[in-house]
Length: 240
Image 1 (cartoon, rainbow, N blue to C red):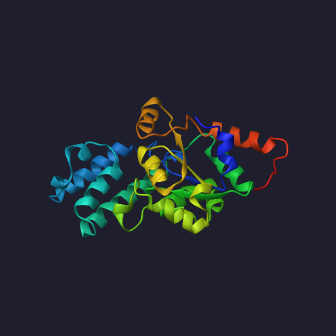
Image 2 (cartoon, rainbow, N blue to C red):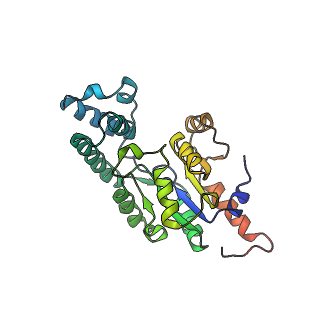
Image 3 (cartoon, one colour):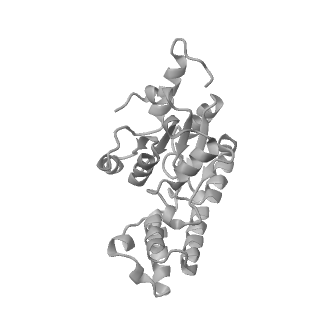
């Protein structure tokens, strides 16, 4: 695993995935139930055949959305499906749980002059809703990049990362992404951005290792500690 302090030596902007590194969005509103609801809706529309058996049983709302986007891009019922997912995400924010040390990491990086952005497959409006409630929205400003109108651009497509690099004016080689899924890791690789995986359990760790992630942390604590140690090193400037 790379020395976490060294990652900050070359980083001027940190890109956060939302659900996972920032919070557990579906902590009190299970994602598998959301996915099942979307599958049931498709079935009632006579569209169940658009999903493979794996997609239908994935328990992943974004897997369902991506599968329909691949089969029927730009369709009216795809837009309706996304609207339903956004409403589920809105309800989920009411019981979302902040990831331990995430708030502090975000505030600390922002106070030291690092650029910050959100790069997520969730709705940007929902992310903004959560961050506002936590008093964090000003840390990110306009750099909240959720799923685009073109749903074929969901991660692992690097679209939201590329939008974040463009909006912050940061070169890929100076950015670091923190994500918790294989799709995050692949998207970061495609964008040329360094990646730190967040795995709160062994299952997630194995999934990240399976796509080649080499730096994985069990919480935001090690990143926060590494950054603070770097700032305390002799000769290190307090500001970037």
